[in-house]
Amino acid sequence: MPDPDKKETLEATLLRLASPNNSPRDMLREARKLHPKASKKQIIRAAFSSLIGVADHDIERSQALQNFALTGRGPEEQ
Image (tube, rainbow, N blue to C red; front, side, top):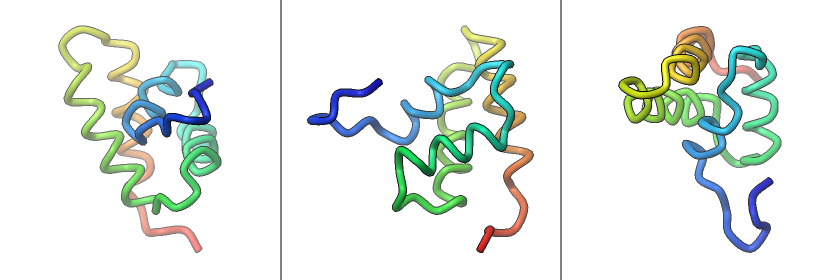
């Protein structure tokens, strides 16, 4: 859990949440809980950004981020 005095970045949150055990829906729900002002579009863009950073050295995490980002590219939820 991040230190309450230091706000964890959206990318760092997604990297922490990315695992084969977390579904895209669970990742989105948790990211929104930790970053309530972030839009779905911002969260998906952060997932793509995070994916680029880990693609070469963490296959499982990058696959989870890719699945999350591609699944979430639909229209903004109300």
